[in-house]
Length: 123
Image (tube, rainbow, N blue to C red; front, top):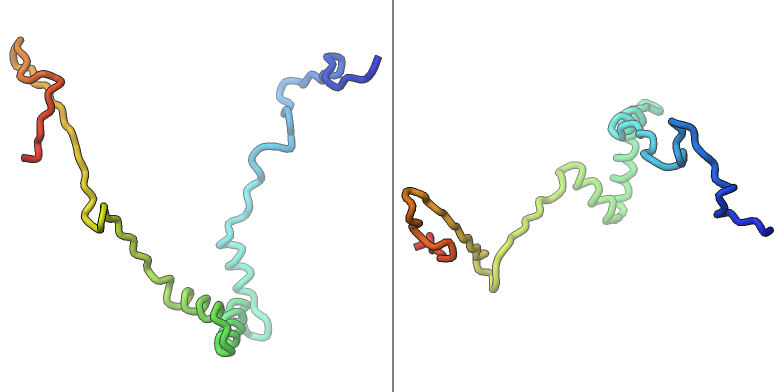
């Protein structure tokens, strides 16, 4: 008889507490990037920290005309420029919103309004 991998004879029963697939699931948590960067960038070589060396190298590139280096320096030195987002309706008009409100007041056995009536509260 040929080998059939789906045969019940090939089932492996797990013991209680065994993981069905130990290679899946949440990966181990990495250390916080801020801590790693602080540790690496604060190291010194020849009296200059790693971060200072990076800034000096980027300044030299910027002075030679590297636009990405200029952008990197200005973004870190002065912060990213603020981005404004404006939401408007059709043809630049304000956004129109409509709200329908239904209120049933019970003060007696007789209803004040039919539940199917719409009341305009904007007037």
